[in-house]
Image (cartoon, rainbow, N blue to C red):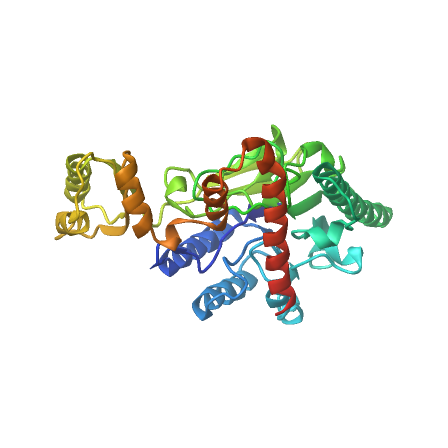
Amino acid sequence: MKILHTSDWHLGRMLYRQKRYAEFSQFLQWLLCVIETEQVDALLVSGDVFDTTTPSNLAQQLYYNFLSRVATSCCRTTVIIGGNHDSPTFLHAPKDLLHAFNVHVIGAKTENLEDEVIVLYNGAEPQAIVCAVPYLRDRDIRTVAPGETLDDKNAKLAAGLQDHYGQVCALASEKKAALAKEGYTNLPLIAMGHLFTAGGKTVEGDGVRDLYVGSLSHVGGDMFPDAIEYLALGHLHVPQTVAGNDHMRYSGSPIPMGFGEANQNKKVILVEFGLAKPKITEIKVPCFQQLVRITGSLDEIQTKIAQLKREESQAWLEIEYTGAELRGNLRDLLEESVLGSQLEITIIKNKRTNDLVLKTINENETLEELDINEVFIRCLDEAEVPEEGRQELTASYHEIVRSLQEEDLQAE
């Protein structure tokens, strides 16, 4: 049996106001080709299907068109779990309809944990068991008590995550044992999840949000039950294993979410069962839209642009000017440099090192260049909060932001 592991599509995501539907469409078309070429039996999507809880009509169209085409392919089953960017309500709305096409959707923690245990079939014959654990929100796994310290909260969250995976995998093991009595032996037990594990790699500008307060998001690989033969994770955008365990993996995002990811090799993971141990193959995702970050003086920037023009590049550019000379007409000069090409400047960051120029540029800085955490850090800096006092304040801030995000989801 072959499964294909992918995650973090973030359909509908924009990059400095640039719409990316062409990239998403090309990726999904490519993914369909991989499914057919490799004769994939099941597709696992480990969360963050959409970039926001209210995806655009075009993002929805891409999603449903893709699922309808998978349903008519060699792939017999698709399992989708919700991520922290996804709306459980939105994902669940067509759940029954999608189930008719062998698409299983688990958008949030279920009241009956058996609903997170899915048996994959080939006709009437079971082939594998999947523990489809979605992103677990704070309220799903932790009760709040007065006077808790940050360490208390972290310990409760870690225990809650471990307990949930333990219970779901125990139910899956029971089902596996029952099927073995019917003659269906050696069924692989696969788990899915959307969380942040210890030592996980992230990059600047990748859009990965903190999932929980404090540092709990860094849970260890030993949290997961030993019964799991392959762990298909989502949330981190860099493809990677968990603590060196080859069978515990993040597939990563299939397209760069920001310029910080521009030079990454994006991947999906093919896993073949039926051998002594799972055969794991990384399949490189093609680059559908080149992203280039250019930093330097005006001459250095223009030299790089000239090189890209000679290469007939169609790249999107993120430009950071670090020259010593103050240039009020920088945008005009750079826009003139790309004339006659298919290069697209997405943003120009005019950074300077002397305090006077930095102050001027900060006044002109746009909100899209900052995320909510950067704004909070700047507030701490402005208030001259000492380092020893920042941990608790930052943890409390993250908890408030998380609560507001979850209230938004509940209000849908």
